[in-house]
Length: 111
Length: 120
Image 1 (cartoon, rainbow over the protein chains, first blue to last red):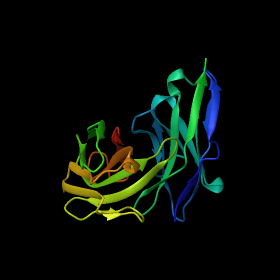
Image 2: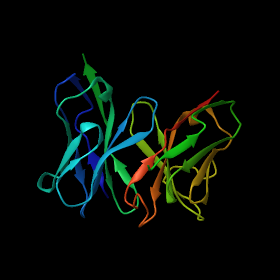
Image 3: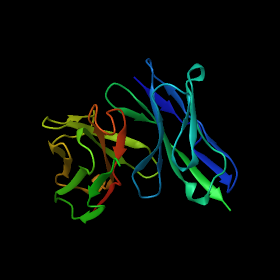
Image 4: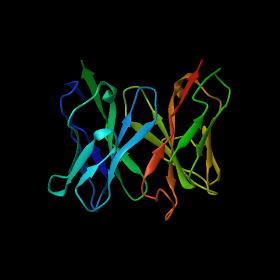
């Protein structure tokens, strides 16, 4: 069965600084990988996804992620965070029938 | 594009009553819809998967008689929490996956804004 690990429960970053959120997955076949963001009290918004091809994928809101098969990782990055990026971020891998989510990483942005 | 709506966005009800939550895919057809439950500060827990015109498949530990799911059309699924009790209070999120060959493909799940249920 597939699984996702997000090692960082909480990250605090200064506005304007760079951000990297880690994600490691376990899946036997070629994974479909996703990053979602959830603002307080809201549903999940898709940031980006990887199915195949270029291992560096661009998403919305200035986010990008890099798929590294050798490390089973799909880390999310943003060069310069904005206060509005404060939210919960979920990495997910799609198995045959359903998505499996990581526990999430809470991002706090300080002025 | 790929908008999923939920109604209501929040609901307060008395213990013992039933509550229905609607999930609609607004600009695409969805053969498969998912219902999740999320506790504070936690990840999403899949409750059930429903395919249009078929009975829902419930995850282990989810009471199918408590959480009734209907997926009667390609754009609408409903979750009914029957005889709700305070322990059913939670944030319920639906998700939809498009058709193969459709405008948003079949691989990606799109999520609704969630419904917060408070049972008194």
